[in-house]
Length: 264
Image (cartoon, rainbow, N blue to C red; front, side, top):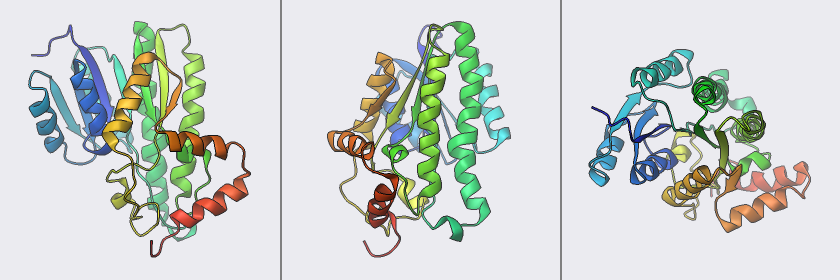
């Protein structure tokens, strides 16, 4: 039976990468959690349970790119009988070919996962938070939100959407007791590169990616401090500052050198 005096967090995309690392932060800081992911979550649960044996960890394998999947997650949350203290909306995928070479099913899947499904669960959980007068929402964006990215065009654009969305709803929720924080990682060592089939790019094949545990620590601390947004890492902060000064055409040309498929 859950101890309802403990804080409760929901993490999407929680089976690996930044999502699993965020879950690690939450359980280490006394939260019980619900992990949701479209891949097997059993291994993630075992890892977390081994690290924090007294944490209550529930898991749900569900496709949040679908309306039915989001409904299942929300029904599970409501079925717990517990208010959500923190929602980490982290689920995301990419696709690494030219937009014109990708079938519709591929690029719509990116949009449905990164945008539609993410907004759907935030809409439902966020309304409950607003009614309760308490809650924290963390949205995983990316420094790619500041850079047009050839061959990752839909992924980059989806992160730009999330960045704008996070700032807007944060303003809507001011004085409600609910905060919204955007986390902007750079290239991070997660499975997204394999799933997007971009390991043959300079960016995807780089061995200098950030540690997801360090990224998650940055995001968790910003969330708990109620910050509007946070960029992980000095070099990523510098890249964002530069992106705000350089024309999009120049940024796209520079980014193409790291995202175009081929020998890395």
